[in-house]
Figure 1 (cartoon, helix red, strand yellow):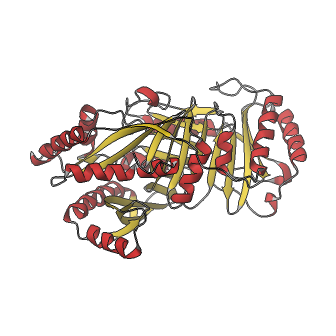
Figure 2 (cartoon, helix red, strand yellow):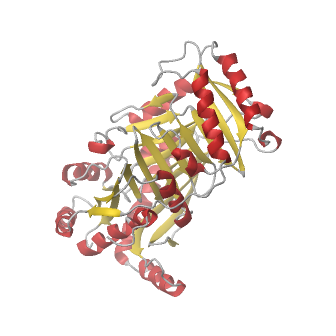
Figure 3 (cartoon, rainbow, N blue to C red):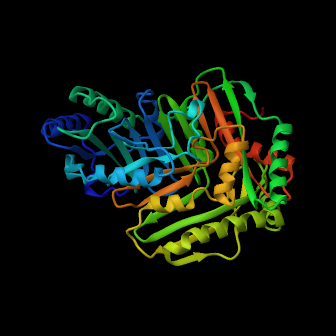
Length: 478
């Protein structure tokens, strides 16, 4: 996703921008096909935009490096179901993108690349309860897209022109669009600080450790029988607060504590899927691929000293169980990417990546594609699910999880991210995440189970992985 910087980012006055926008709307309403225009914008705070029009669908994508994106409203949705969902999203989006016209805006700003944001569920038909609006796959071309890149911000509007394809919503009037534009500009120009979530925990519900231990024992028996090398078990907890949880404040707190993670929000029908995940699935730019194996972990006290973290890192690196679990993930990624790549560089020995509450074994992986015309979704389909969230063998592990795990995973542990008109893009694995419904936040966490996994230690590990969202809420103990 590229935004031109330099002189084109000189921000006009709000009134001048609204006049330019109104003029552009008048000029394209009677033209065929969908249209997009781009303007420079005030830099603002991405999280504050989540306060606007809370019943509108929205997304927020905040990677540790690279462009930040906020999307509001829907021009077009791509939401296929079933086994062909990756191919269907790619093909349906490509057909639509070819019909979209990009026009410059004020100050001759260059249009954004056309980028669609969204994600996939962990497995198909896994959308029970609050997950129902998200489905097997959902990618959106928003009506409004705000992008922050290289210290500059820009805003794009995409609308349906005359005879455009059937839309997912009723086209707004010009006056309604101008009203939205004014609200967006005001929020971007707002310099007031974001407060904390300010909630009080009323109750906390979680899986009983005895039930978890029974699930882990079932997996260990499957592994002992030789049917699996590894299965990732997951559980869900629910924090219920006295008042509705402020989404913008929660995301701001996550940013303060986990700037090295991919922070994300996908809001649909008033329900928000959000989190701060440490794990990149894939980034594709031209013929260059970047990914990583992130598996094997150890908990760390929140206020651990440097010496304590060094000792924990040494313990993790010397753990036969964790090194074995990590090697499974590395080999699975190697096997999936090698047929696509002219070159693939994988370090022989993992390093330790440290986060606030947990340390992970990590192996960075770089590749050069044999064909730069490959679409990032083709690679996502090959990689998902990695053994760090599913198991080995992969297809059988996903089936076992669906039959035995007592929760619907929905988009938890699924691929989330974006792709553009060139087939480039970036995806992360949706971990350290939750599903927000008003005052209720469902938390999801998992642990890789291998032959010698200890149920109690794995239960504690899932407790630690839920701390990212709990601490962002201001909850210190449950």
